[in-house]
Length: 231
Image 1 (cartoon, rainbow, N blue to C red):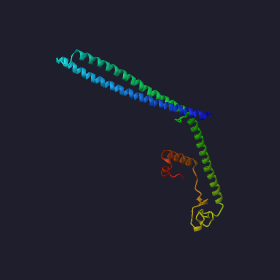
Image 2 (cartoon, helix red, strand yellow):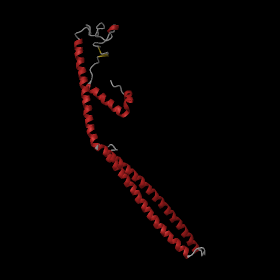
Image 3 (cartoon, rainbow, N blue to C red):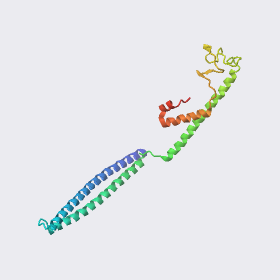
Image 4 (spheres, rainbow, N blue to C red):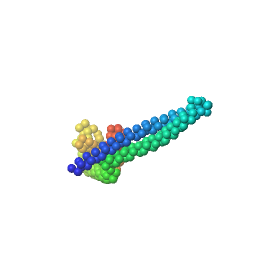
């Protein structure tokens, strides 16, 4: 029940933070527009003041003290207003950033980012232990294969799999290919449809496992199979 309540609480907090961002961004955009308009008013007032100053300098009766005073006052007003609007827009931009921070905090509280560094460390250690155990099991299988191979070959020396010349006896039921009467090297014996290979280098096999795993991580399974033959 508490989990359900917490989930609902986190969801509500995230939605509220998102709404706060929307409102802050709208206010910021409006103030930016007002700041831009205020700057345009400054530009217009400056141009008008320049025109009036030129008229007075040229003794043009179309402009006088009244126009000069009025336009100069308007210019000062627009400059102050533009400054105020720019400051308000900056503050509004800061409010947007603050609202975004609140959203991040709400998402962190809800666990949306899925970050758990310490847990990953523990999982990595457990995975390493598991992989090491699997490699040890595989090494034990390789060693067991070698022990069985040596025992089989030792037994085969006392059988008809080897003739007096020390070569394979094609007539032996142990010899691979005996049905076709093929001459084979000594001890070419099949187990479960596969030839009994020579010694399996355990360390070599483990190295191949690790090499293959690295290729799979870097290039995925299909490409790894094409790059290297595992056995």
